[in-house]
Length: 322
Image 1 (cartoon, rainbow, N blue to C red):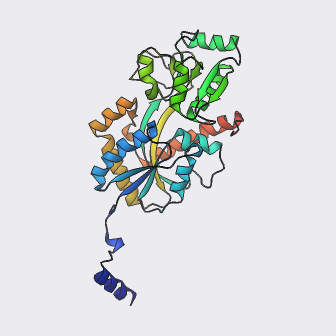
Image 2: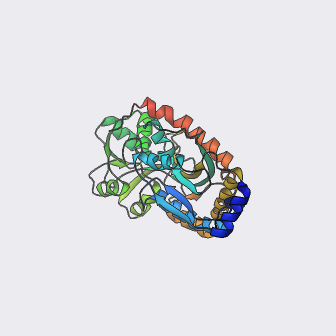
Image 3: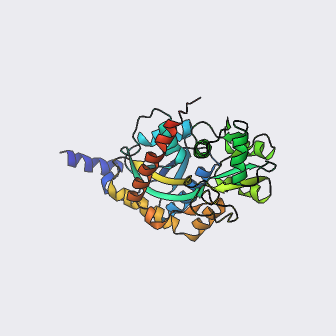
C-alpha cells in the first residue's frame, strides 16, 4: 500500500525518488568558518570551483564565522550527513579553538575527514627597523629586554598567537601580545613601526617582505619556503623543532555514506591535480598536500597528531579567552 501510494504521488505530482538519484543531484555547500577575503576563504573558493567540474554540481562557499571558527564547525556538526554540506578548516578552527572553547562535538569522533588540501608556512617577522638582523640577534635582544617587545596576534588562541607563545616558550623569552581583529591591521601597525613582531601566514605578507617593509627571521617549517628561499628555516636559525605548518583540509558530518565521502575525496584529488589550481595555490604561497596525505585516513591521522601535539602546549600556557 505504501509503495503504491509513493508511486502514485510521484506520478501525479512529479515527486522524485530521492533514493534513485545519484549523488550529487543538487549543489553542495562548503562552510568557510572564517571571513570572506582571508586565506581560508580563498583556498575554499579555489578548490570548490574545481570540484564542481568533477561533481557536476556547484560547490557553494558560505562564510559562517566567529569564535575562532567554531561557529562554522558547529554548523557542520548539526548538518545532515548526506554529503550536501562540507566544511573547510585549518589549525585555528580545528586545533587551537578546541583547547579554548567548550564545544558540543569531538573533532575526531563527530566528523568524517575528506582530504588534506594545502600547506603553507607561518613565519616570524619584524618591523623593518627592528634592531636584530637575524634570529640569533632577535633571541639575544628579547633576552636582554624581557617583556618589552610587542607581538601582534589575531585574537587569543589563534595560530599567530600560538606561534609566538610556542616560540617564546622554546627560547625562554618574553613579549607582550597585542590582539587585533584581523591580519590586515596587524600588518598596518607592523609596517608603521607600532609593533615589533608577528607570526602570520607567510603568503599574506610576502609582498611586504619583498618590498623591504618587514624583516623575516625564519619560516616555521622543516624545509625552506619556495616563495622566499633566502629565509632560513627555524631549525637553520637555531631553534630546532618549532614547526608550525599552516594547513587546510575538508570534513563532512559524521555518518556521511562512505561512497559519498569517496566521491568528495575524488573530486578534491582531481582538483589538486589540476595545474591551474596548483598555480593559484603557489601564488597564495601554499603547496598542494602530497598525494599520500590526500586520503581521509591520512587526514584523520594527521589531525589526531596535531591535537595530541598542541592541546597540551595550549593548556600548559594557561591562555584564557578575553
